[in-house]
Every structure is written in structure tokens, then in C-alpha cells.
Amino acid sequence: RSTLFPYTTLFRSLADAQWVDPAMAAAFGAFIIATGARVLYRSMCGIMDRTDEELVREVTRCVNRARALEVIDVHHLRVVRYGMDVHVDVHMVVPDWLTVKRTDEIIETFRAEVYPAIGGSTDITVMAEPCHGLYCRRCPSECDHRGAEFVARKPFGIDAVTRGDRPQKRE
Image (cartoon, rainbow, N blue to C red; front, side, top):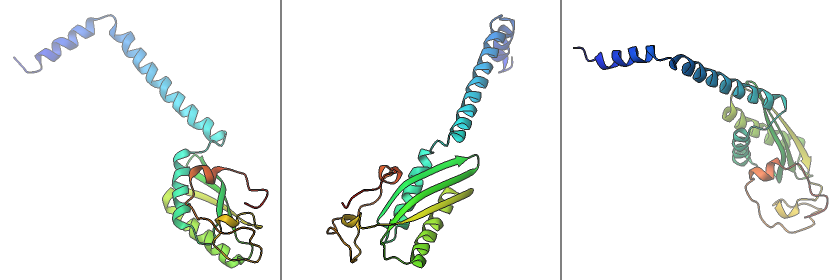
């Protein structure tokens, strides 16, 4: 006798069973429906510009790693995946007195941190905004229009970078 004898007996008994064919068809049908639902969900998320939470976490880590002393606040972060392409849009608040050249260096440092972390085809748009004296408690820089004493500089969290609001009055 062969060691395969128990298996051949099992296969013969299953082949004679009336329920095997419908059960296999139902199992494959469920697999196809589940796969189709996942593809549809991902497609709809892309069409509806749904934020990819894992990418937002990674970009937030990059923001903190590449953060220059002059970056006071980061907000309005949006990270959207379009197939293999990723679009990152973020606003950075810098002191009013900062030069365009230095602002551009900060943005390029940020981009250099994000590109390898995300990979693929990545489009990064950074809007640098002047502080207008609204962030004095978080700004360690000295300037002529400081409205409050510097309190603390904290790392950016996901909630802070994804919010879209700006203070309307001095902190």
C-alpha cells in the first residue's frame, strides 16, 4: 500500500459528494466578491481624495525630522494617493523677517526628507506663510513685533499638522 492511499480515498469520496461543487463555487464566488469590493473601495478613496493615514504619519515624521529652527508651525497637511502617484500639500509658518532664500532652503530640506520616505512619483507643494505675529508663544526667534514671550517648541503631531485653521489673533 502507498502512503497516499488515505488521501486518494478521501478525494474519491469528495468527488462523489453532491455538495462539493456548489461549496467550491460559493467559496470562489465569495473570494471574487471580496477582492472586487477591496478594489472598488480603493478606487473610490482615490477618486474622493481620501487621506492615506499611514502616509500622513510618515510625512509627519519627516516634518519633525527636517524641521528647521525657523519653522514655527505646520498645518493643513494633505496627503493623497492617486494610483502610484502621491501628492503632498502642506503649509509652513515662518517668521516674517525670513528671507525667500532661507525659506526655499527649508522647503528643499523638507522635500529631500519626504521623497525617499514615500518613494514613487511624489509631488510636494509647500506654502510658506508669514507668522504675522500670531505664533509668538511657539517662536524662539527674536523679532520687532513679538506679542508674547516664547513658551515652548513642541514636535508636531498628526492632529496639529492636519488641522486647517490658523489663529486669528495673537496667542
